[in-house]
Amino acid sequence: MKSLDNYWYNINLISLLLWPLSLLFRLLVMTRRMFYQTGLFKSYKMNKPVIVIGNISVGGTGKTPLIIELCHLLDSWGIKAGIISRGYGGTGPWPHQLTDESSAEESGDEPVQIFQRTQVPVVVGSDRVADVELLCENNNIDLVLTDDGLQHYRLQRDLELVVIDHQRQFGNGFSLPAGPLREPVSRLKESSWCVFNGGDSDYSFKIEPSFVKQLSSDRKESVKYFKGSFVHAVAGIGNPDRFFTMLRELGFNIIEHAYPDHYQFSENDLKFNDSLPILMTEKDSVKCGGFTNKKLWYVAIDIKLSDQFLIDFKKQVKELTHG
Image 1: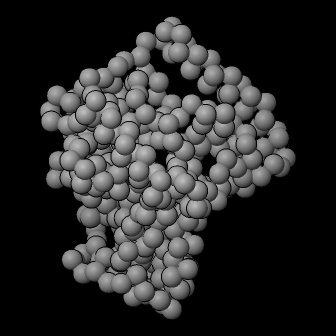
Image 2 (image 1 turned 90 degrees about the horizontal axis):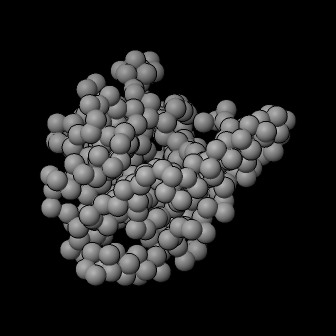
């Protein structure tokens, strides 16, 4: 992601050279969407309400921890949610529903993390319509949350929640490959909510570190446990810098190890020939269960949603599920 950030988040020679390709990409995106809107391409309406949670840009925005928090909220409101996800990084077969034995290698890291944290039904697969059908067939649920899939127009949706990184926002404003945008910024006008990761808008949330947990045991410590210590910081997520910045703000002296998003770690990746602790994201930790050791820890996080978003989100999901 760092190499992409060099030209996606500012205007430079490389982004300008790629700009004609981004115009072609935007034309293809708009044409495809128009075909679905006019009925030339068929889309499907499910028999349960569908809420899409995604983004218009490439890179991590905090979508996964937000989905986990929304699942907890829905459960507290008496609403039974189910989740579908693409299962990026997984091998399949598709579609399938996760169980306690499901691995990140088979199902992808984000779905496994969501399932472990929420215990709600999770189905992964490349065909989101088939995913929803399997989810509804096997489970008694009130609504469906889709992990990503904002651009998967074959699946009709009742509400859309677009997650935006408050700090990075839309980069240089160019579409792929000259910039980070999957769809133009004007697309946001058609979504139900735009929720910012960071900032103090009416619709926003903040990610706060909660505790650190040792992978090889049930041991948990305060987030300040490693304050002042040197640690290896490992991140295979869409925006590793956010994780590294959080650790520095906690007072850790970090040695950075950034990997591509959804990277499948091996034991050799985490051998640094010293005794320093290794801290990673919870998303990355689900891929390390087969070779864990006492040096490996993950940082658990909490989500704090703005009051206005909580009020409006609760109102709309209640209307969807109870008429």
